[in-house]
Every structure is written in C-alpha cells, then in structure tokens.
Amino acid sequence: MFTHIKHNLPEITKEIRVKIADIEERLKDLGPPLPSDGSEKMHILWNMITDFITIYKNTITGKYDAKRNNSSA
Picture 1 (cartoon, rainbow, N blue to C red):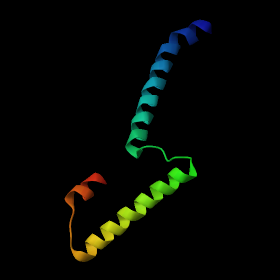
Picture 2: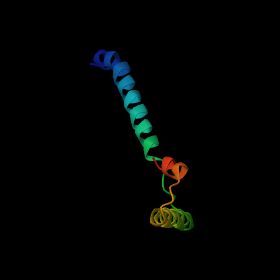
Picture 3: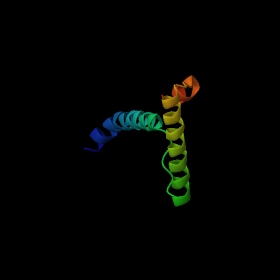
Picture 4: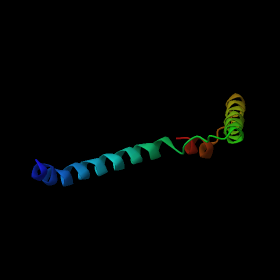
C-alpha cells in the first residue's frame, strides 16, 4: 500500500497545484477582496455612490465618457 501511495502522490500533488492555480486566476478576475474595516467599507461605498451619481447625471445630460465606461468593463 505504501508503494501505491508513493507512486500516485506526485500526480495528486500536481493536480492540486493545477487546481490551486486555476482558483487563484479565477479569484483575480473577481478583483481585490473587500476590506474588513468599517471605515474602508464606507469609503468604497461612498466611491460607488459617487460614481453612480456621475454616470446617472451624464446619462440624463447625454454626456458620454468612454474612458469611464471602459474602466468598469
């Protein structure tokens, strides 16, 4: 049994490394993690609200900002 484990362990380790790399890549696509500090959360929320208001006002006035729209994509 020990030889069986010893024989298959490198393949299992390789598969785990591949899966970890895949998950880390998927996590990067989600962006940075949310902060745990309340004041940092408030700062992010405030920025999101400000961006929303700016986009909303620009939509109403017919102003289009290609740079702003490309940064969120």
